[in-house]
Image 1 (cartoon, rainbow, N blue to C red):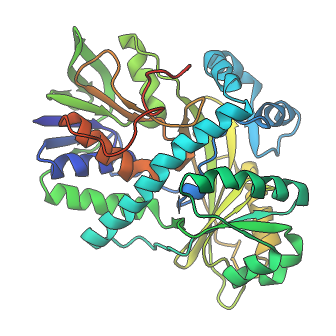
Image 2 (spheres, rainbow, N blue to C red; image 1 turned 180 degrees about the vertical axis):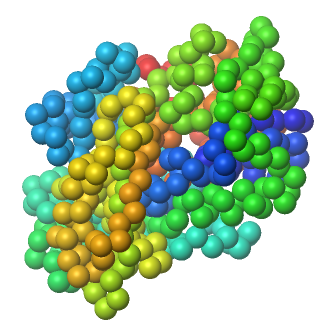
Length: 418
């Protein structure tokens, strides 16, 4: 069977690996010169079942409204983006009830747990090195009331398989001594021992190398221009380097997915939410983080990547704007100074921005729609790396008519009010 995977980020490369392992003849089409050049290049770097909560929550509408007046808000809506996101936005608001928030978070958790385990198994099997850290993740709280509520809400996630420990500030500092100098700033933390972190681009490019050695063809520098259909099937994909035909196609193009499917009459409810990351070297002898963390008050993710620390934050609804805007990194810099004042070196920053492919409810879009030979593997949002291996393995299984190995309820377009 010939299969073409559209997209060379971590989601597409993982799908290509599992397809090749299952016996398919695989081609990956990617517009950049190498794999992991966009969203997979410099995300937070967390493998994070503990960070599975859906963005559509009862708190979200108020946060977005306030962001119109606060340019430094972590979750920000730019007015010029409103006309292009009306349908998506209305669907997002429908999901902002407590009941739907909990359901969507549990759907994501199901795939997160499966995928994190699979990622580590694949890493060990292939001997991939990517500055990985399996010490877990700390979700830091500064506000006592918010901390108490999160600790109570954690019970629902624990009941569905997530391991979470409720810690006071002293307990958080024992887990990661890098927090000891600033523990008085914390109300407490939740600790997820099964979380981890690492360099997503290093993982993706190493996996691409293993896939190529197994026979996968990578067509880099090939921009996808359009998808051509023939009745209820995809006939070919037209790229800047020519036509590509196959028996089956996998759409793993993240935020670009809806722009290619629209002309075929398929609405994919995915919106590009811009995120930023700041990577700083560790300062020798200073108190730096030793593991993955999230500053829940400032909504900044933190990951230790060998001799670097990455801070990632912001969720900006601004359309397809990928410009790196220096002032947008202010919040991340403040968190770095506040929590690790002598642990990181701000004089050597690396900046990145990308478009996270967000669905209104949170879970990705998998399975099929009206085309029998087109499989979706897109819309993974801010946890694309966490979900990539589990989603890739399930997609390969479905293409070969096998059990995906995970309950697909809530992970396809069927039955979702999107």
